[in-house]
Image 1: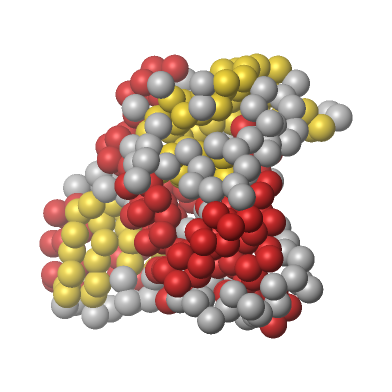
Image 2: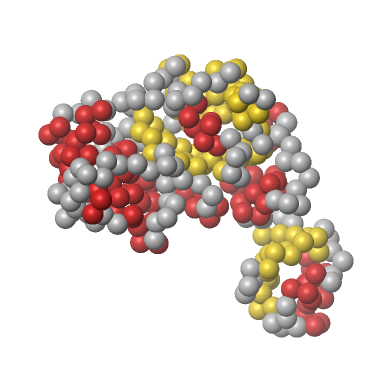
Length: 312
């Protein structure tokens, strides 16, 4: 049974179609990434799954139930807009959030203490929220979201604003919850994080589904037309070759999209400069994202049924 299933879901705001005929299946115990540009419909989709807002058309099932309430004890939600009661102490906050999910205050406090120790906040329990740093407060809000060990965890941009250390701590906590059976849906603009963590990646663009599948199947769908290279000369030497469609200059490395034989490009470069690295690779998720939603994209067309089946 899927943890979440959407069938033909559409949401309009007056004349604006925010989500257009969206169908999704999120397998249980998977990590499912939502990606897409700002305003593409990601947050609207998440809020419909939570029943915070209702679709105009279509059907949504969450954990085998329709019309699941947002406060259901089996679901945890970390919104993009963070918010904690600043005058309360951390233990009070965690006790309160636990009680909202049906826990006794004692159980919530015990679970909160364990989580605080795990996330390097052991000394923060008696501090007020207003006394915490931004990163510490964000970890407390994450604890409040997962304190009841939800079956389904929905995270909207969970890593925004975190330094690398806290980023890693939170990532490890999410992976551990998943290993223990929690299904995780999270939206992110960090393509490398989606590549590293997600079993499946879904992309929405202008309200329509344009990607849905494993990273390997998505990359396979887009072929092996990408070369990553590092040379002594600049990107101009690469751009002048007729088989090159596009060069993304990353500083020390160039990512090249090819329309011809990569070996011809390699032979050209060897004649004119020192080639330090040359790799024929599948496109990164970042590159695929830009192809669909970047300024040079054609239309970001929704997947056909045949394309969706091929990617899956």
